Image 1 (cartoon, helix red, strand yellow):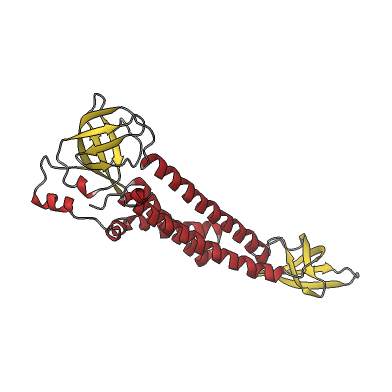
Image 2 (cartoon, rainbow, N blue to C red; image 1 turned 90 degrees about the horizontal axis):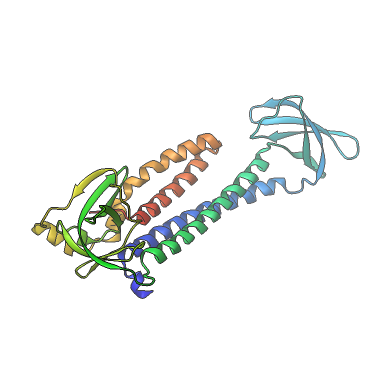
Length: 304
């Protein structure tokens, strides 16, 4: 495990996973607080009856209903879903204070349902992050068993598609194939072509000299789409020096900043669809931004 944690891609994945889990925890805490506030408004509403909607006034509905003793009462209920005037609906009310009532679509009921759904979604998302991390670490960084070994010429190509740039190794095999790899500074100074040792069949590990390049995905026989940039045949002095310099995780995160561009847009779309306003926009923006960093780390973004 100590050796595994020293690998730069593993540290990158774990760091962005921590950001995603922190975002889930923050959103979960906010939803829990909203649920507690809404549940507090509903506390004590233990009696039931049938209410008639008298009229609507903005986001409030005036309702009339019969009490347990036979007398009538009225209450003004804040609603997120506006009922039709004259319709009859089940009502919950506080026997000690009939003015406190709730009908279907009332704001506290909608809030409890929404916050429960969001909180559950964040728990599922956090569990998904942990499950995917374990799968990725086991399949891409832990060697299990042996496999055939062969020596083939390779070329390093950098491909930009959308907001993400990745490094690929083009394998000059009888059937040309491409393997995405996690970034290593050694990729910058890799000559074109270079001779590499490939180990494994389905899970391929690539070694060039004393450097190991871990796969960031599966081997494919179709060329990756996007804007392609090939390494030069021989690295110049600047590239050779860059290949010897470590790339910090801070620089890696700075290079991944473009993935954040989509977060506020998704937040606006969700807030409009779900009607959650600024709070919903902020929650979704934070989650999408954090998961964008995590997604870039899993895919093996290239900061060079």
